[in-house]
Image 1 (tube, rainbow, N blue to C red):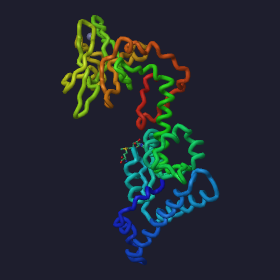
Image 2 (image 1 turned 180 degrees about the vertical axis):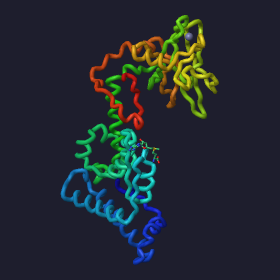
Image 3 (image 1 turned 30 degrees about the vertical axis):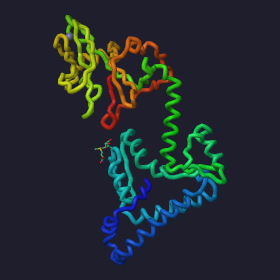
Image 4 (image 1 turned 180 degrees about the horizontal axis):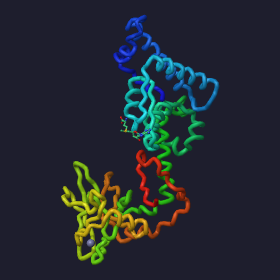
Length: 348
Ligand SMILES: C[S@@+](CC[C@H](N)C(=O)[O-])C[C@H]1O[C@@H](n2cnc3c(N)ncnc32)[C@H](O)[C@@H]1O
Ligand SMILES: [Zn+2]
């Protein structure tokens, strides 16, 4: 991983080099400042180059100069390696101090998080200048028209290019919007707006198990708790309404002191007859395909915040409209690394 190029704490640097008796601390600090300045200058020269993303002799030369300056700097710094780095906190902090830092993890999710927080921002989270023609090629006319005037390079009244302060965040926002538009086209009709024009953004589902008491056999939502929103300033929960063997819900605000129906050993306690359906029996129901699902709540966007409501009858049946997908993966899940990556290995 490259340095984050945040000026490191000098004290740490001096302490690390304290056995370098041949040189005084002042000399070492000057040396450090020299390399740091070289990085900054090389960055400025490279980032001032229009269309630096295109590999030309000039861009290559400037990029090499920057890489060499970074390497010189890092050679004077401690190396930090966290072999079990998880979310990457240790390599990130080490890099913020200017160290040459490395992260590793067996869990692919942790690895991707590390890439996202440690590697890609260093490589791509930098300024870039595009000529108008290059920008249009990469992002199209609509995006050009959305650029703010202060980012445009205007010469004699004509916009000839644009200066993007952070290439990575620009790209993340651009592609996120693009993905959203594509998803909207494909599945937007499953998330209709309600009669007041509020857009549905998520559905809150539960699995439904069957009480193993032969005289009860009630369908019971497998719920560990009833909150659908549990923040310090906002609490909303599903309050069960039980009539005979039917379980309905209303939404309530405030603290919920009800015990969930799935208990610590993952057994189901039936709220109707009090019977315990064991985890093994539930597993059996899952494997034989008896477990159903049920829509409990709809999350919509209202006045720029999330609003929770009960589903309408149409929404309750929305799954019947889902066209079966044919491109889902069919290969078996790897099960040998279950400690690092929690997998449900119920079919073995
Ligand atoms: C406690 S977390 C790391 C926390 C991290 N050092 C921090 O400061 O935030 C331990 C990590 O070790 C990873 N891990 C466990 N066994 C491993 C192995 N054999 N090789 C690499 N990573 C492993 C796990 O996936 C987990 O992300
Ligand atoms: Zn029961």
